[in-house]
Amino acid sequence: MDQVSISASQFSALTSPKIGMLASGEGITLWALGVLVTLKALGNETGGSYALFEEVVFPGQEGLPGHVHTLEDETWYLLEGELVWTLGGQDFLGKKGSFIHLPRFVPHSCANKSNKPARMVITYAPAGFEQWYLDVGKPAVEDHRNSPPDVSSEELSGAVRRGKEYGIIFIGHEDEDSEMMASGSNQTPYQ
Image 1 (tube, helix red, strand yellow):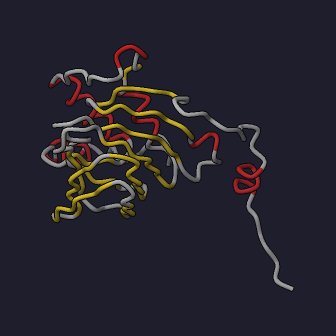
Image 2 (cartoon, rainbow, N blue to C red):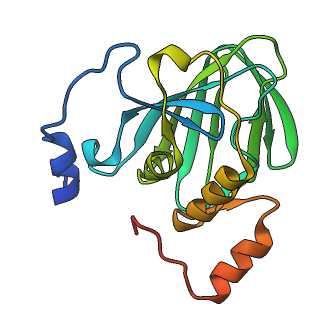
């Protein structure tokens, strides 16, 4: 008979007191660099195995600026709308029902070049990067969720700086990343 081994952290995730369901619209909703993000499952609710949330990219907008994750893999499932994805230097048109799995270290970005919002479900595994959204995001007030706020250069600069703490390299900001590596700051909050 085969034996199954479960570590303490896996058992904790299986028996987590956070088991439950969120209805449509529930979760922590934030604006992060002009993208509407609703966090649905945080790492502290999944034993650190993954984080899951919903994002809305509005017409004429880019998602997050081009970047690379060094600590987690990502998946995206497009629920509605269309997005042009740039993945590893190649462009792809994603439509409703498109699924993307992206391992860490692959440069990527997306843009909504259509006239309708694009809505998707995103996962990060392992969890931890959701904390970046909590750090840089601003609460999305219910009455103002249909029009993205302007993003200031200070917000972008702060988001890039905070991203480094979570193993994110924003493309076009590599000099700042090199300075961080030279200073010996390569720890992340969830290592």
